[in-house]
Image (tube, rainbow, N blue to C red; front, side, top):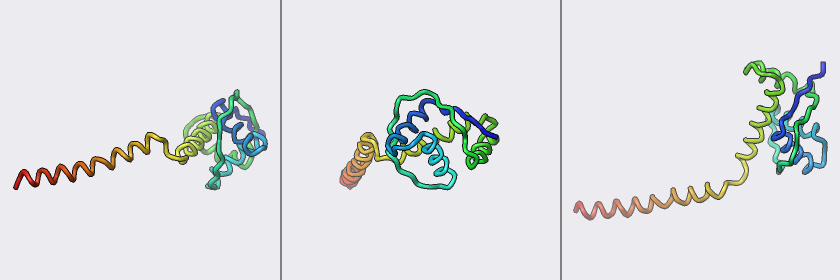
Length: 129
Protein backbone atom coordinates (compact mmCIF):
# COMPACT_ATOMS: atom_id res chain seq x y z
CA UNK A 1 0.00 0.00 0.00
CA UNK A 2 1.34 3.40 -0.94
CA UNK A 3 1.24 6.18 1.65
CA UNK A 4 1.28 9.73 0.41
CA UNK A 5 2.11 12.62 2.71
CA UNK A 6 2.17 16.36 2.16
CA UNK A 7 5.25 18.25 3.29
CA UNK A 8 4.54 21.81 4.45
CA UNK A 9 6.15 24.75 2.70
CA UNK A 10 8.77 25.51 5.41
CA UNK A 11 10.15 21.98 5.36
CA UNK A 12 9.85 21.73 1.60
CA UNK A 13 11.82 24.95 1.19
CA UNK A 14 14.69 23.47 3.19
CA UNK A 15 14.48 20.21 1.25
CA UNK A 16 14.59 22.13 -2.05
CA UNK A 17 17.66 24.03 -0.84
CA UNK A 18 19.42 20.78 0.08
CA UNK A 19 18.39 19.17 -3.23
CA UNK A 20 19.82 22.13 -5.08
CA UNK A 21 23.08 21.93 -3.09
CA UNK A 22 23.36 18.17 -3.72
CA UNK A 23 22.08 18.47 -7.31
CA UNK A 24 19.52 15.70 -6.77
CA UNK A 25 15.77 15.15 -6.43
CA UNK A 26 13.50 16.22 -3.56
CA UNK A 27 12.47 12.61 -2.93
CA UNK A 28 16.11 11.54 -2.59
CA UNK A 29 16.85 14.32 -0.07
CA UNK A 30 13.73 13.49 1.96
CA UNK A 31 14.68 9.80 2.03
CA UNK A 32 18.25 10.73 2.96
CA UNK A 33 17.04 12.87 5.89
CA UNK A 34 14.72 10.12 7.13
CA UNK A 35 17.54 7.56 6.79
CA UNK A 36 19.87 9.82 8.78
CA UNK A 37 17.27 10.08 11.55
CA UNK A 38 16.49 6.35 11.53
CA UNK A 39 20.11 5.18 11.47
CA UNK A 40 21.62 8.05 13.51
CA UNK A 41 23.83 9.26 10.69
CA UNK A 42 25.51 12.61 10.93
CA UNK A 43 24.92 14.53 7.72
CA UNK A 44 26.06 18.09 7.31
CA UNK A 45 24.69 19.85 4.28
CA UNK A 46 24.38 23.59 4.07
CA UNK A 47 20.61 23.89 3.91
CA UNK A 48 19.35 27.13 2.48
CA UNK A 49 15.64 27.72 2.41
CA UNK A 50 14.06 28.11 -0.98
CA UNK A 51 10.63 29.49 -1.71
CA UNK A 52 8.26 26.58 -2.01
CA UNK A 53 4.70 25.43 -1.78
CA UNK A 54 3.43 22.21 -0.30
CA UNK A 55 4.68 19.04 -1.85
CA UNK A 56 2.96 15.67 -1.90
CA UNK A 57 5.19 12.64 -2.07
CA UNK A 58 5.06 8.90 -1.50
CA UNK A 59 6.56 7.76 1.78
CA UNK A 60 9.11 4.96 1.29
CA UNK A 61 8.26 1.58 2.77
CA UNK A 62 11.48 1.54 4.79
CA UNK A 63 10.45 4.76 6.58
CA UNK A 64 6.82 3.84 7.11
CA UNK A 65 7.30 1.94 10.43
CA UNK A 66 9.26 4.82 11.98
CA UNK A 67 6.78 7.51 10.88
CA UNK A 68 3.78 5.32 11.83
CA UNK A 69 5.24 4.67 15.29
CA UNK A 70 5.83 8.40 15.77
CA UNK A 71 2.28 9.16 14.61
CA UNK A 72 0.63 6.48 16.75
CA UNK A 73 2.56 7.54 19.83
CA UNK A 74 1.21 11.08 19.47
CA UNK A 75 -2.20 10.16 17.98
CA UNK A 76 -1.62 12.22 14.84
CA UNK A 77 -1.70 11.57 11.09
CA UNK A 78 1.29 10.45 9.03
CA UNK A 79 1.45 13.84 7.33
CA UNK A 80 1.62 15.74 10.61
CA UNK A 81 4.12 13.22 12.01
CA UNK A 82 6.44 13.56 9.02
CA UNK A 83 6.31 17.35 9.19
CA UNK A 84 7.10 17.28 12.93
CA UNK A 85 10.01 14.89 12.33
CA UNK A 86 11.38 17.16 9.62
CA UNK A 87 10.88 20.27 11.79
CA UNK A 88 12.86 18.65 14.62
CA UNK A 89 15.59 17.60 12.22
CA UNK A 90 15.96 21.06 10.71
CA UNK A 91 15.89 22.74 14.14
CA UNK A 92 18.70 20.42 15.29
CA UNK A 93 20.67 21.29 12.15
CA UNK A 94 20.25 24.99 12.83
CA UNK A 95 21.26 24.51 16.47
CA UNK A 96 24.54 22.81 15.55
CA UNK A 97 25.69 25.52 13.18
CA UNK A 98 28.25 28.14 14.13
CA UNK A 99 27.34 30.24 17.20
CA UNK A 100 25.45 33.44 16.60
CA UNK A 101 26.99 36.82 17.31
CA UNK A 102 24.67 37.27 20.30
CA UNK A 103 26.02 34.05 21.86
CA UNK A 104 29.59 35.29 21.45
CA UNK A 105 28.73 38.64 23.05
CA UNK A 106 26.96 36.88 25.93
CA UNK A 107 30.02 34.72 26.57
CA UNK A 108 32.24 37.80 26.64
CA UNK A 109 29.87 39.60 29.03
CA UNK A 110 29.73 36.56 31.32
CA UNK A 111 33.52 36.43 31.56
CA UNK A 112 33.84 40.10 32.57
CA UNK A 113 31.96 39.97 35.91
CA UNK A 114 34.48 37.46 37.25
CA UNK A 115 37.19 40.10 37.02
CA UNK A 116 34.91 42.65 38.71
CA UNK A 117 34.07 40.15 41.45
CA UNK A 118 37.74 39.60 42.16
CA UNK A 119 38.31 43.37 42.42
CA UNK A 120 35.22 43.78 44.54
CA UNK A 121 36.30 41.02 46.90
CA UNK A 122 39.77 42.57 47.20
CA UNK A 123 38.21 45.96 48.05
CA UNK A 124 35.91 44.37 50.63
CA UNK A 125 38.90 42.61 52.22
CA UNK A 126 40.73 45.94 52.47
CA UNK A 127 37.72 47.67 54.02
CA UNK A 128 37.29 44.90 56.61
CA UNK A 129 40.94 45.13 57.62
